[in-house]
Length: 307
Image (cartoon, rainbow, N blue to C red; front, side, top):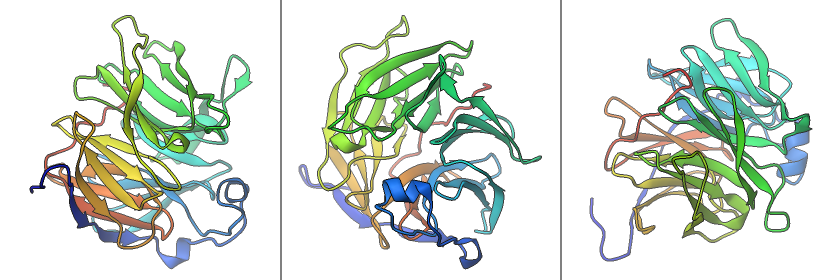
């Protein structure tokens, strides 16, 4: 696929599957009251994550649900609980780690359906509202604490929880930290500052700290970047709910491709999958759909907590 000059190649994603009617719950929720202007919504999908067998897991934030979607698009409700689950990663084989806005970090055994708290708060202080998370190849966890922060209150945090259990604040001044992902060599962390409408580039130093953090990419529109992913060429994939699209950004911060949504604009998150790991699956939360498109190259490996 090619593009001319700085004009990115623009194509439309396809609907892969949508939430069946039997799972839709059109009722008021506290999350929707605070985050969707009080509009009654029947679902809000997030956190796409594949298991080794090709099934896709997604969260439904306002209704506290986690679903498993089989390769043949069959939906299964794994759990419904008192929480607001967002990002997902594998803590170990068969155990999901959940970034839960209401409860902090939680873990779920997908076989027994047992869910329990892992890290509800830090030093007796509650989190603002955790959002997304990612592991490096050494088992260190990075996660965002977004809450209701924004340009009016740029105090969102990004944490690292080491494999040994040490919790460190890496950033404490982000206007709405959301999705995050590591570069292929794990020397750079990219963080979506949703309400700042930008992506932050965060070098990770050998001593565990950060330095020379800067703005890597700026967007526009009513809502900024959300979920992030990375391909093997070091290009960043950005889910942009304000514009209803996914961007592919090269190492210079220039767009190479744009994929638009055929239904709804709430493009919240994305995950690489498929046989060659080149298919990208995207949660479109407004319509309760999962979209799909083919990327130029495969995505990077998604690590678990136990490597």
